[in-house]
Image 1 (cartoon, rainbow, N blue to C red):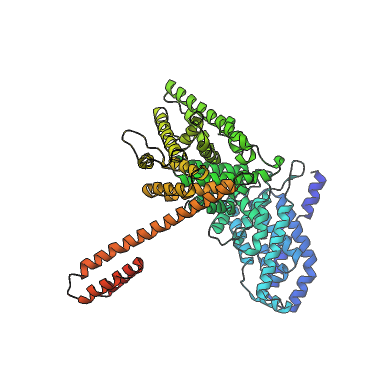
Image 2: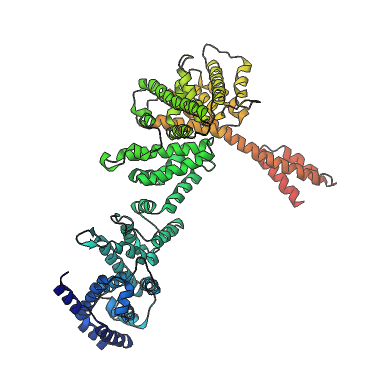
Length: 633
């Protein structure tokens, strides 16, 4: 800026005397409420707007709010009295300039008591302007204009929100024109009192979706904390884009969303269909596809949970469903707008990324077997390298890290584990080893050396039993063969147990894709599930299989679909009967306690009532009626 320009700016800048003169006039306007006052304000409206414009320029040109207040000590009183004069705030341009002066005075990083007090005062003024407090002047103006109180305040609030939106829309960061990014932080701070106002939703959305172009224009922490709190308490409705932007800016909000999904999806009674619906409706897959940073945080939360619960099949299934929905959303984006797969999975072994992230439905059915053998060999190679490295250096944890990342990716792409179980139904002894190894690794990732070899032997034994049980040529089967298979599900002394879900997964696939009559397959599964108590696991395996075969591009004939539905119905009936039996057993225990207490008496009516109840057909109702009778006695 040249010397002449500086001189002209100084001459046009308001001074303390001019501000004092305007303050006297504003005080006079506030003390009188008459038609003459309104006329006087209208008469000076143009000059007032010019003066406010000059004030705004001066505030922006001064280095700090403290320096501005030092030059113009009456500025706060002047702006405050204008804010409470409804004749001034009712005029759009004057109100806009007034609000801009307040925002310009707001300090992004207050460095002294003056600036901290100024920030607190500005927030208070903006909050009060959005409320319905009515003073005499405001009532007089509303009465004269014929505008209801609520409508007046809503219009003021909406206008304020519109001006703030326009202000942040003009935000720019340029080396030649200077940086005005601080207005984003100031506007977000000023918006804190308005968080729960529905009228402020457009402004909140605009702030959240404002692109970050400079280190100075980050959203205020107070704004993000207030937004997170209001959204968590469900008192703030946000559009989907705003929710995604909130997760992008606020780590606590994103963490809470992922943990809430995990909690709801792993609750009792969750089915694969319900889990997929919950995951899709959570917006998280869509948000992760749009923002790689959101996916990395969500993925890390799942990683941490799985480290503590590697055998929790429900958590595994939620993780698989989440990844499947994420990949589906990612496929909908244009390649130039999405990050690379390596960016989303930076810790996964590169050799496994594409083979596992490819969906089985995207490949020819005849290629699945060779593809899965290749995947199994890649993971086996990583595991063997880990064992060799640990033999050389027992303190080496890098190899184990690679194997864990391979297992984590396999969990995320659990559809390939399902394909391996399906292929084992038609595999022979000569080509079953890679698939059995993959299933064993999936269910027992932390076991190494002889433990893995031992469990592989058990998995092979389970497969041999199933081949014999479901062999058409081998029927009628020996009576003890099924019991031998069930015994594999129980722990053995000095031997790590085979994961029950592994054996059950194999059996369900034999029942669905095998050639035995459906009634025979159903009978065997009923006995296994009934003796092992794996009802929930069986319905989960069948539900997952049904979902995979219903995916676009999957080939499944009507016979397979029919067998899945029949088996699911059978499992559901078994679960219902088991629940009724549990309830009836509890009621029977209560009845025994009642009998022990009452039958010692000589009351013959008790004996008669018991005899009558014995002849009722509904045992549940019979037991409950007897308990109620005894309680009355």
